Image (cartoon, rainbow, N blue to C red; front, top):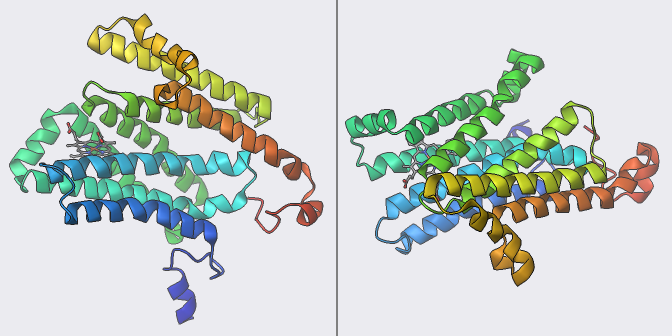
Length: 303
Ligand code: HEM
């Protein structure tokens, strides 16, 4: 009994108490950035404003983990990889932990001057948006336990947790609004979020995840990202829209990875997903019984 309850606290073990390479990899994914940040702080590598730099790094990590968490459900279906669902809670709670650390570091940066902190949050729209997003994330975190799912009922719980899309949208708005001249990273994250929304739409409207549909989704979302990035620069900097859009075409001329724009990365990500789907599709089409003999993922639940 004691061992069973201890197992539920060891994040690298699955529900049966066995070592899970997937859970261990997810744990490394969430813990390593924090360790790097602590190491950089310890060795004075965070520059002249270490607290501000730490606010940025934790914010970026929270954003990344939110997107990775959102990717779990569609990837589980597209790759027919049921076990992936087992790391979603860990990823989501880690996003919350980084976002909470982000707020805490911001308060430290302002020397816990609560009057200043509250007035800044009220005065600066991007901070107001950030605090709303964090509040939503806390609500999801608190209700993420098995007990809460039982108490709320699956339907109500699902309805509440669908808010994660709104919360991610608000976080991305917060990210974009605080960006200065270079919006490469927010544009990339917005594009990846758009790709995830397209996947969600495909599942919801029962279009399904065939390889041609996934390729089309990748290319269309990549193009939309390039157009949005162009529009952002054109509207906020006055730089010629054509010049910005041309940067998306230069990559063909220069054939250099350094010239890849967010639109390219979004399209590439979508194409990789489509490729993995095509690779796994033959195994996925096998009836469950037969798959056991041919698939390396046979022991996974179909969920
Ligand atoms: C879900 C909640 C949140 C997420 C995902 C998030 C994410 C981010 C991201 C990605 C950045 C940009 C980091 C970079 O440029 O490298 C950022 C910046 C920042 N965020 Fe947040 N944030 C959240 C909530 C908050 C809250 C509640 C506050 C404080 C009230 C806050 C304060 C800041 C500040 C001060 C910056 C830096 C702005 C600047 O240097 O001009 N964030 N955040």
